[in-house]
Amino acid sequence: MSGQEPEEFGAEIVSGKSGMVAGLPPYDMEQQLLPREPRSPCCCLAWSLLVTAINCLLFLLHLLLMLLIFTLVLLPTIVVVYFGFQCHSQVLHSSARYCRSILDDNSSSALIILGFVIMSPLLVVAMAIYCSLARRLQLLLCFQPLSLALYKGGHCCPPRAALCCARGCSPQLRAWV
Image (cartoon, rainbow, N blue to C red):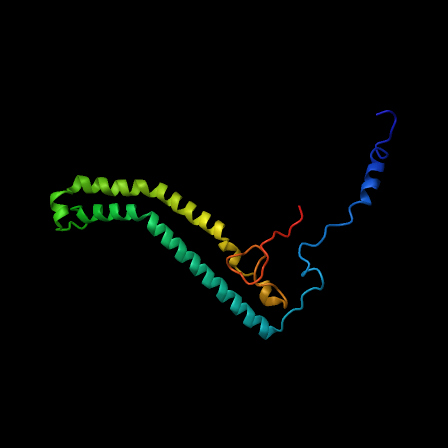
């Protein structure tokens, strides 16, 4: 550094760039105009109950979808463990023909162990299927924020929730990078 002071070094670069960055444009043109107006207490209570009910229904839909996927994927484990416990002499000891002729206590124990061993990989597969389905259908974007109940003029659907809100939300991403 040929005799320049540290304060002077780069000062012309900072002053030259400061005029260029005026600020980023807003993400959404509808949200930039005015701050939203708060609702009255009675209206806020009614809207919060409605938003909560919608979110609870969506949660139950997620649980139903998860239950369906996990049941279908874990069906082999359920069947193997069921027959293992049904035919073992220390547990249920069924008098069914296949328990008397095919399965004895050793084979029933083997079925129980096999069922519990294959359960772990099938749980991972079931969770991967559910997560990819939820991501592909954008199911987590369907949940509504509580700010819908607090302020007037809010949107009831996020910009990218194509499945949940098909009534005019544009699927374009409105973010500046």
